[in-house]
Image (cartoon, rainbow, N blue to C red; front, side, top):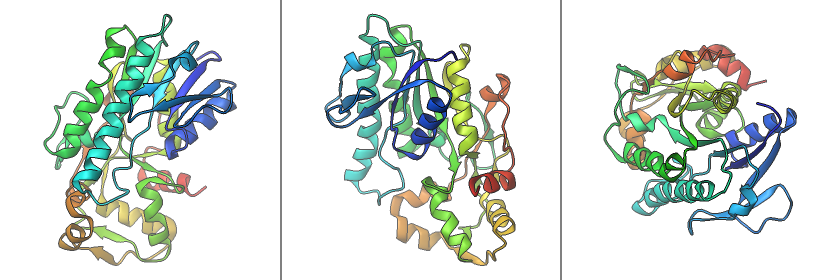
Length: 299
């Protein structure tokens, strides 16, 4: 992509912050959507709960990347917090889609966040973007989340749903919580360890988003996962190898259900998701296997 003006929501999160750094390092102009009055020229005010976006701040943007949403694993899933998870995604996405669709000259592409939670529990079955949604809370949220981009699609804007897997990074996300435990020798399997984890290195995730922005043939759902999903047991073994720590502890499924409530079903569920469309579009992963991905996160 030539030097462009790109708007990013969720710019303070793990993925958003890394994307902003990458874009700015290559000379792109980045404007960040912030939930307060804009204080500088590189900020645009928005309020997802009120479905408000200062659309004037998006004028001249070549692309909009929407990554904001309440953390799925940040709190126990009460009915109130589940509503927050859903609303932060669906209402915020609808607001941004309406805003970009209202512009006289809209951006060429809207890259909107989604998640492999769309597929639900796939067991040992490998799935790609052609698979239907699963059953349960997270699949239902993902379906609504993606449908909320409809105004942008109807306005002729190339719209991509980035179905993100487990991002491996030391500085945040689910994996950021695992590293301290394993470094302390307290890591181990979750449940029976046979559930698949579809992971992706943070470096590859950012590179994949930039690849999507540059690849006009990509629209609709794109899985942002590595090419070789592994089981939780294999993750545990890899963490032990790379960190040179014992991995003797196990968190039994009943204990996880007591500790995590409804969210435990997703922690113990299996998602064997493949990045079919990325591979078909000749995207090259820098860290395709789990050991290399963990080492990259520790650099």
